[in-house]
Amino acid sequence: MQGALLAAASRFTGTTVDQLTVKVAPIPAVPPEQASQKPLSSAAAEHLRQAATVLEDPELKALFLRLASLASTA
Image (cartoon, rainbow, N blue to C red; front, top):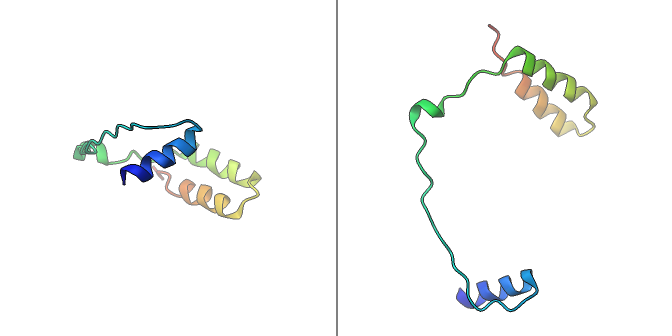
């Protein structure tokens, strides 16, 4: 794959690329206490609902409303 990667990098940059370094690292594990999410506040949910009213894209509008529905009822 070395030749293909160098050729693609050369096309992308518009210059001759004759060396490429790739660094790989594992994704750090998320501690369990950080994995839990804080509930969405009712104020944030209201802002999302208001923003959804002006959106023209029906899918994006539905996503905003779905996210707003996750608000804490407390």
